[in-house]
Length: 357
Image 1 (cartoon, rainbow, N blue to C red):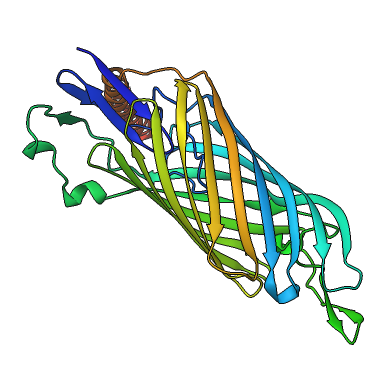
Image 2: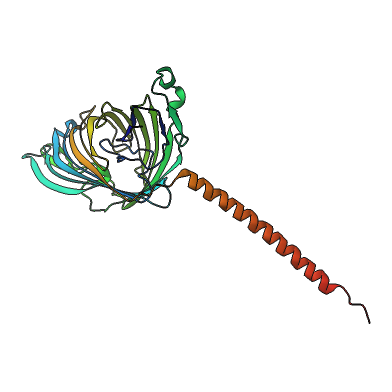
């Protein structure tokens, strides 16, 4: 039997020349990366797996309401993921750091200066609490009807990520707003726009779902609440559709929406990924938004690599161990009951009056 499994950007694809029995679980033979899009997949990397996901991005922002003031810069991404304790659990760090040149065109002459700072500095935990793919599934390669799309294939795996944003009051991009410090012209004078203070500590929650269908398609959704416990709560969503058309290549399209008092927008990204080997993936993408306050253009390149220390455990052995634990627990329960009865018998024997000789 020969088979080839790809798990690329939250996508599981089967390539087979014979009957395949595949158990879907947290750990996969190929790297399971959240890149190249921005969404978070429902699955963790697997127990004892260390994964690094990094990239660089060119960003160009222009704001029509501020006389086409613009921000042009580079953004570096770093995500560290580690699976521990259980297959469903991982700890994650996400950092996004920006270097830009900001040109304020509300002034005469225009003012340009360089900045740098964190857009994201997050640490948290992700746990998969529902996995519809756990059960073994037979794939019939000779029957199109048996493998056609079924509504139940859309039942998603579901995970929850909870964590903390760590920032600074001196952050150059308060509340992730690159146009935070902008001056409005009024009779050739300037007035600084009042801004809210950047929260040093805030919460973040991500509910992620992941559906697999038609063998080569995956649909991921994220529903995010950011800056929890502050006055500037931001709600957003991410929808990612991925398709693998070759054992090494996949493409994706993504929509991200933001809703807050500070910023509302829709961002669209599309791109592809290449699986170099089981532990290394390269990717690239382009992104644009739908408004001019500000308009944005994004080019992204990145890679993901994992250090695989995962140890496969035979399901039959796990089943036997569970049965042995049940038997052991039952025996201990019986033994405790027997000990209690023996103690009661001893107490009754001691209390029984002795006959006089």
